[in-house]
Image (cartoon, rainbow, N blue to C red; front, side):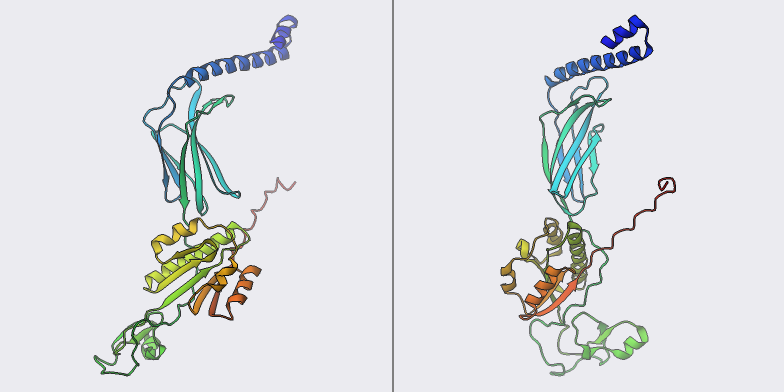
Length: 333
């Protein structure tokens, strides 16, 4: 106000402009604080919060509290999975059903949502005490991965290949299944068609393979573990389509999964942790597959397990980092 008085007395344009600007700002703050104090006596915001499986939030409200002029409600969501995985999103609260899309990496996030009353210039921000909390689970997605073939195991009663009475045409065939006896492979048909078949005129039923997978969660970064778990999702889904039994064990988290429907939620909450020493002494089957990465910890674990069991190690390498975008010519000057 002093600058405005100096500008009026001496006729200085700069003093008039600066004094007018500060006077407007002071008057705006006084009016805004009065409007906020009036609004605080009104009922607070109400609504319901829901998390989407794919990574998103839906907030539904029936009626907004009154809003002064030049003000608007905004929805702010803050979530945390680990120190390196957090998000803070703010969207305008206009529609009765407000969706917040969150393209998040894998994890289980603790989410806190609140309303904020913000003026058009960003000078004043009112945060009502109302809060909504939820847990948002972002499951790992599949990625391209070519898993090794399952081991040829038979379960149940087994009879010799040529025991009993043979029935049917000797050349009855069916598509090859992982774990089939290679002595029943129909090589001439494979040479002509390129598709693997086996002879079915046998007294013994087709074999049923089984895969026992142990996951190493010790990784350098969350991104490296993400790639390992996404490859595991693809691998197990492929085994399920092939009607091959499987069991996934994560010793560091004491998790055992035998169904595809429970696999992704169980993997979403994993964080990089080393396998405990007692995991090496666990009662595992004689044939196991260790899903690990090209790290010293993974190689050390494989060396510990190899003398005791028939071990198959599958190392999933992290994706190569993307090449930086070329800088434009004017930024190189």
